[in-house]
Image 1: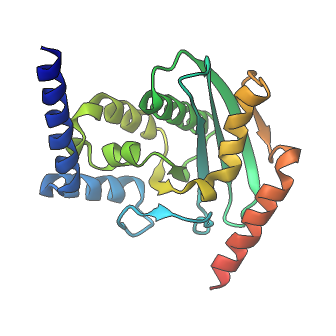
Image 2: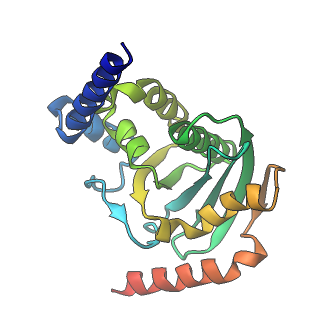
Length: 220
């Protein structure tokens, strides 16, 4: 019975993976509709993994979400860092969430928390950068990820609080500052949730280097 269940689970996962690789015309229409409603000022583009931090267009903000989770730890660390088109950190936040069952749940919970924070601070035109390509995929093409239907529905619901939004997949190298803040929850046992201006002083070098890189990118 266990072997039969395992084979069935593998088969289901395989079907889901292949479904995610195929673009459903209806999903394309839905993605286009989302883009036209929430990202009306920007052209739609394919989701690509960004290898370096790139500044948002003028008048837009960019929010990097950091997640640090391990099955060996009782707490998950999460953070968000909000920057303008000059690469200046406007706000950042850190939080600790207990009893998260797996990495997918950690990514989902942390992202919902970050979006809810942005909404509560009146942010209305923002690009979200996440390391979790699955979560980005289920938001942009929910029908291709049936196992994440509930997560996609909930995340799209909270995203409605933002006037204009876009979501991108980002490499860890381009998300270093946000990840280090999330990582500090467990490593430094910093469990108090807060929102603060600018960034943590011990990350001056990290954000300064990303700001320099972003200025080079803008001039290219």
